[in-house]
Each structure stands twice: as structure tokens, then as C-alpha cells.
Image 1 (spheres, rainbow, N blue to C red):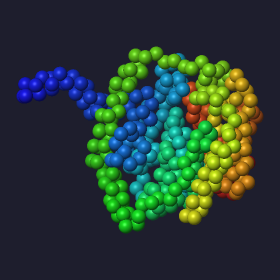
Image 2: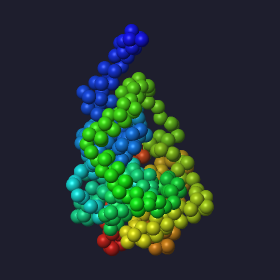
Image 3: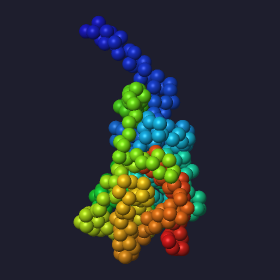
Length: 363
């Protein structure tokens, strides 16, 4: 038995050495193309509370947009990422109580952007109040269950979704956690903030992720693109995540369900004396539909914004803002090699959001 154990250990020793070097010697982002891949939590969500590894500070030259991985179309971007103790992309500040919270997807988390270019940072600069990027959070239900915001609710909650995901927004539900169990949840949350606990969680998660294996596999493989999602434009080769399929007509039932869901978010936050603002992000295919083989303009987002305003739901008209900026100023508002908005798109949305918050009108 002892001999078998020694032979097994000898056989596995090269693998163990390589894994040890990756975990304890090399930088955490060494075997990744983007910071997101280095910091995103894959498995150990029971120990690590947020979406990213906590208390991290990384600067990296990213060489892979989400639509041009390992191809000649990838445009390098130097980005800085800082995460707080809760695992969200925000500089850690003791006792910070955000007045504005943005619940959203990878656009709000700032994929492709350096830290100061994120919507939350731009809004914080303009509003002069703490703004927190609660992203990617999945839905408003995660926010409603978070003890941080139950104890110190923000004044304003902005819910943001990319256009293609709006029809799939989960219906808001109040947390079913009973008051008598709050002390347990508070104790659990405090436990996850202990640095030694977080260190163990990060190491375990990195072990499961096997970044080195995927990195080598990606390096060996050849990058390919779907021809129907790659089209020439006056800005250069433009890549789309869905192509023409993104602009297809949305059935009325799904449209109605999306409107009712967003309206329910507004109502549930009003009951908590929190101001609700909906911030839709147009699909890249929406604004640049004229570069697609079928150049017909989609109308889903325009109709949705109109209906929400009719129901007195505060909504940022990003459809009008983005469309006008492109038509009048030939503006590129998304990364060419990525599905996410670029700094110009972020700032345009921020300007309109600030005007709405300050009561100066969103148009």
C-alpha cells in the first residue's frame, strides 16, 4: 500500500508542481486573456459571496474581446480592475453606504473597460455621491435578499439590462428570510469577509477552474469566426453576437410580460421608499442594423421605453440617445470586437441618467 502511494505521488508530482506554481508563484491572471476570467468565481459560491474574487487589484493588457477570441480581429485593451471585500468591482471603502446602486449585467461590471470608465464610476463622478455596481447580479431578487441593502437601503436603484435579455428578466420577489434567522445570516456574511476564509475560497476556486489547461488549449486551437456575424462597416470589421436574429420581432406576450416585470420592480422598490430607474442598453445590432444584410430597424426597445413611460416608470431613453449620437455624429458606441459598450457609450448613458436623476429630463 505504501509503495502504491509513493508511486502515485511520483506519477502525479509533475502535475502537482505545475498546479503549485500556478497557484502560489505566478500572477493570478497569468493564464487568462481577460481579467474577468482571472477573477470570476466558478464553484466556491458558498464561501465567496460576490461574483469576483474579493480585494483584488489587477492591471492587464487584454487581448481578446468576447466576439474575437484568439483571432486577428481582437483589439488589445489595457484595463485596471479593483474589487471590494464583497466581490464586486469597486474600490473597497470601510463603511461606504451607496446612495445609488446599479443592478446589471456584464456591461455594468465593465467588461472591456478600465475601472474609471465603468458606468458606476462615471455616475459617481457626476453625481458626487457613492455609486455601487451590483453586477453581474442576475436579477433584482439578489439585491432584495442582500442584508447590506436591507440595513442601509440606497436612495436610487438603477436596473440595467442589455436589450436581448430584457424579455427574460426574472419577476421580482420579496425575500422569504424570516426575521429570527437574520442573526444567522449576518454571522455568515461576516464569516465570508474574513481574509483567511476568502484566501482559502479563492485557492479552492482557482484549483477547480484550471485556467492553465484552458489557456493552453486556446493557444493551441485556431480562432474562428462565424461569417454571418462579421460584417464590414465604416469603423472597420464589426462583430455581432447574434447578427440579424437580434432584430427579429418580439411576440406581444413576451413584450407584455417584460413590461409587467419592470413595472413590478418599480412598485416593489417604491414600497421600500427607493427610487427605481430602468436603464436598457440597446443591442449593438439595434444601433448598427444598417451594416447587417437585412438592414431593417428594430422597434422593440423603442416601444418598450414608450410603454414604460406611459406607466410612469422612470426610464432612460437610450434608444433615442444612442441612435441620435450615431446618426448625427457617426459615433462608435460599442467595441468593434466585443458585444459590450465602449467608454463613449457609457458616458452617453451616464449623461442621460444624471439628467433624469436630477430632474432635468432624460431627452
